[in-house]
Amino acid sequence: MNQPIVDLRSDTVTKPTPAMRRAMYEAEVGDDVYREDPTVNRLQERAAEIFQRQAALFVPSGTMGNQAAIKVHTRHGQEVICEQRAHIFNFEMAMTAAFSGCLARPVWAEDGILTWDLIAPYVRGRSDHRARTGLVSLENTSNLAGGSVYPLEISDDICDRAHAAGLPVHLDGARIFNATVALGRSVVELTRKFDSVMFCLSKGLGAPVGSMLVGSKEFFEEARLVRKMLGGGMRQAGVLAAAGIIAIEESPKRLHIDHANAKFLAQGLAEIPGIKIDPAKVVTNILFLDVSGTGLTSFEISTRLAAQGVLANGVTPETMRMVTHCDVDRDGCARAVQVLREVLSGPHNTTSA
Image 1 (tube, rainbow, N blue to C red):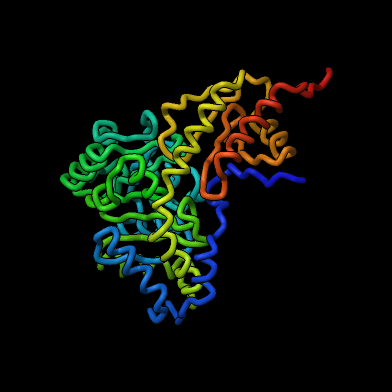
Image 2: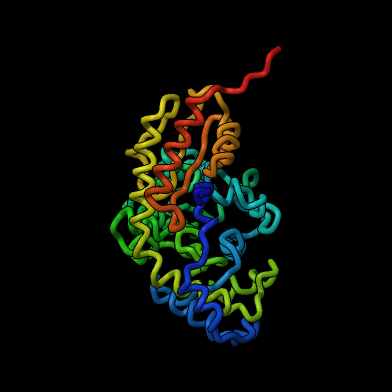
């Protein structure tokens, strides 16, 4: 009997739960461009309530949410300070430049966690020679830094000092609920000082589509216009919002399982010869492993794993990323470790000169 696929490529591959599917089927809908979809309205109201903000906007994707926020907060010709591995810099198709006319100013930080001391040298005011800083953007959790989490005192300090310098601060909180579980703090505590927050419904929370953008009522109205510019004015979107309501109400309660599975996975991987990973740095559901000691590239390993029903992506030739989520249980993680061990212990293909 064939074993099920163990898909560790991302938490974006999650499937909607039976409760979500039922809610989608039964959703009451209207035209959201006219603000008449009752299910979208309920989702937005509930998200705003959970984050203790004036308003929330349902958008099709996290990228759209981030880029709408950047557009609202900045003017053409400004710079956006972010960490070097930030999603807005690496994975959003240069939209900061293409749409908002802003230059990303990436700053490297240990484990992807910026501090004000790292940011301050790049903050620029009015000048005849240099672009002015328009926005600071943080990412929590930090995807490409292995799911690392901002300590509350650091993110609060950045917000306070940025605001003192007259700068807004946006949070790419795609996985902010993972951060709340890791830190044992509420989303209100972790996000209260940011001018805007984006979080995803379609990653660890398991909804099929969508993200939320939260902030003030004034920000909401401006972001709504930008969403329309980007083609995100959806009509009977309640069929999607219904799953989002389930996601924000129920899914955060089980994220600790994903974190425990990631730690278990990291500990198993650390015991495989040729693999380098520090399990102590795995604090949420994302982990990176160095495969440079195996004699194979990450892409070769990925191909061999896939042939055995385990999916994981190479990021660079030397590194792979694995992400745990609600559709991979402890047995699946154990199988991934075992298959990787077998793949690396077998004969490596070589090409003769």
